[in-house]
Structures are given as C-alpha cells and as structure tokens.
Length: 587
Image (cartoon, rainbow, N blue to C red; front, side, top):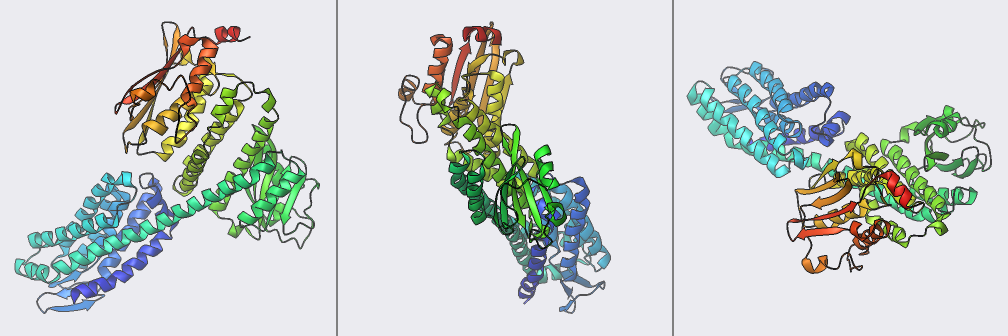
C-alpha cells in the first residue's frame, strides 16, 4: 500500500519536472552543464532545494509505534518520520549540476528536513546532503555524456535512498523504532525514489532531444533553401534573381513577407503589403540603412519599419546583411505581424540563410572569372567540397544555437571563411602557408565541433616559415583525407598533428595522424594515379602531389609513410621556403 501511495505522489514530481524544463535558466543548465554562470548557481541550488522541500511536504507522515500514516504536516512529533520523495530533487541536482550544486541543494533540503523534527531528523538531514554529493560526483564523471541516462539515474536514486536507510539505522534513536521504520518504509521508498529519479531524467532527456530534432529540421530547411536558390543567386543580385529567391523563401519560412534590397533600392518584395512595398523604390527604413552600414543582424518593430501607410500589416521584421566577399551589397528581410512571434531560432535561421545567399553571390562573382582559371587541378579540388560536409557543418551550428550561441557564431564564421577560401582558389594559383593554415583552421574548427569526443588537433607552427608559398588549396585536402580515412574506424582518441617547421633553411610541412593507416598495395599507387574511392573523387593526394612537383620540382612532392593500424604521415619540403624566392621563381 505504501509503494502505491509513493508512486502516486510521483505525479507531483513529474509535473514539477515538466514545469522546470520550461524555465530558461534551467534549460541552460541542461544544455551547458559545465558552463553555468556563477550568478545563476545560487538560483539553481535554491530551485532544486525547493524541489527537495516539496518532496518532504508531499510525503506520508509515518508513526512507527501506531502504524499510522498522515499527510501534509508542517512539523513532526518526536515519534514520527516521513516516507518522502525528497531525494529525487537532490539527486537530479547533482547529476545535472555537479558536486557543488548537488551539495548546495542537499544542504537546503537537508536543513529544512532537520527542522521539521521527528526522531529521524538528524539522520535524514545528513543523508540528504550526502545524496547530493554522491549524485554530484557521478554527474561530474558522466559530464562527457551530456545527460545521465534514465537507467543510471534510477540506480543513483536507488543507492541514495538505500544510503539514507542505512544512516537512519546508524544514527536514529531509539534503535528499535528506527529498525521498525526502515522495515516498514525502506523498500517502498528505495523503489519509488529510484523510479522517480529515472522519470525526472527521462523527461529532461526527451525535451533536449526534441530540441535537437527541431535544430536538425532547421538545418535541413536551410540546405533545401540553398539548393533551390543557388541557380538564381548564382546569376548575381538583381531584380529577377531577388524575386525568385523571395518566392522560394516565402514557401519555406514562416513569415508574412520577404524582401531583398541592394544598397539603395528594393529589388523584390513578396507577400503581404506588396501593393505598396514595390521593387525599384528607394530604401527609406533607417534600420535597413543601418544594417547596410554596420553589417548587424537587427530585429525591429512597426515604428522602425517606417511605412508611409497607416494600415500597413507589417508589424516587425528581421533584417540581415548580404555580402559579396567583405562588401555588403544588400539586405534580406523577413516580415511578421508582431515582434512577439520572432523567436531566437528565427533570428539564427535568418542569419544562416543570409550567409548562404551571400556565399552564392560570391559564387556568382567567381563564375565571371571561370575562363581565367587555368589549372584543372584547382577545379578538381574545389569540386570536392562535399555537400555532406556542408550539411554536417550547418547541422552542428544549428544544434549549438541554444547550447552555445557564441560557439555557433564562431563556427558559422569558420564555415564562411572555409567556403570563401575554396572559392578564391580559382582566382589565384598560389598561397602562403599562413593563408593555407587559416583555411585549415576554419575547416578543423568545424570538424572538432562535430567530433568533439573523437578528434584532437595539435599544431606545431613555426612563424618564420609561414610566408613560404605553395599551390592554393594544398593543406586542406591532406587534412581532410586524414580525417575522412584515418578516423572512420576509431571511436575515440584520434589525434591529428599539423607541423610546419624550418629545417636547414628549408620548410618542412607534415600532416600526421594515429588512425587506421594505409595498406601497402594502395600506398604504392596513391601519388601516381587517381584511385577508386567510395567517399571522394580519388584525386586529392594525386592532385596535390602533381601541383607541388610542377611548382617546385619532383623533390618537393609528397612523401607518405604509413603503418596499418598505427597511423599515417604525409609530408613535403619547400626548398628555401622564402616568399621572396618563390615570387621570383613564378614571375
């Protein structure tokens, strides 16, 4: 009967758990467990401590001598105790927040329990504190898994409540009453609180995974938009391409109108208010002019839209800059009925779409110089920018929007830099190693975010060697090849080392990993002919090697050493390695 009564009270706990997941700072605790601001720590401790206090008040008052149960007493008589669910909140605090939050919540709920009274007051107060410390220690060890599984949460709740029963037997007096109490309520409390803790973590986990699913949906939407709009934006920013793009965006984005401008005029407006927000009209909105001047993403209300019609239905807008290279060439604007419907996800989606359109505009600029590209090897390398890499990169960025907005912004910049460097490869035949390293670091920043628990990158860069000149897009294919083929069968511990050093007046470049290695039969053909590849074109190493030899002679070609199962090293040497020398050689 007591087990049924305890499980019945789990409905209250489940309700509280759901309400807590609606609180912004609590969701931040879930998403950034090890990066919660100190100013929020006290509030979180009080929240979980209050959760524990509710668990005490919703328990059943047990009179061991009379074998009676009662509800909702504010104080206990000397011969009374509580069959409660207090430990659920305390264990959850430790598992989610770590030792300090677990200890703090345990102190709050434990001190409260002590002052409720009863012959188990001291024992229950001490056991509540220890439960927070135990859960916090386990939560810290499980930090890399982001969230403790419901099964592990059940086990921790089970052990914490069992520990409380043991402490009651050790400290509560008289021993006979303590033994009678534990015999009566021990197993019901252990089982019910274990189940309650597991349910609490299950609710939280379902909320987190739902948000991640929504993030994946948003990233897929962004990629779908990129695929649909690329054939128009690749023609440049003009009235027809802007109108076609706005029409596509209206079908995919939950906005009442979409507009694209250049620096001075409206190029297209699709949706409501298109009768007076017409193309070719000069830009009048100060907010739009500010976006063009500063490059900021803005959210504005009805007053800042500055429409000259009082009955205009446009109540709010999100405005993002469109860039071609480093130059701001226009704006993308999504309109809504009011500012209330503009969510943070919509803000980030607008920024992402604007970035994709900007990259497409830069592609349009590159298209005008296609005939000037004389090196087919560069084109082959550019063709290897995998759509899967773009999808994975955007997926990571969208999933980080809530977890770590600053990190998401940094990765978005890295993605933009990476794409820009690939595109600029067709306008020049050579780059310095410093430029190549910037390209590689942008690529690896995204890969490290994707494989944060598998990939470790190490750099050994000699600044004195960074001005040496190599063919454009030389290092990135070597690094990508190492990750794609070396890491595919490694669950963890993959280390990639990029080393650029000056040795005996020459510059030595080396990309080394501890991955799967390459079979000897395959190793003998990689540099001399394209090979069949299931995941790429099979041109990367062959192409890089050929261009290095064409530029600096056969002695500068790639040297590959590999042991199957132990790793691979790819290196090459630039003789002299001075920017001045290289420029003389290629005049």
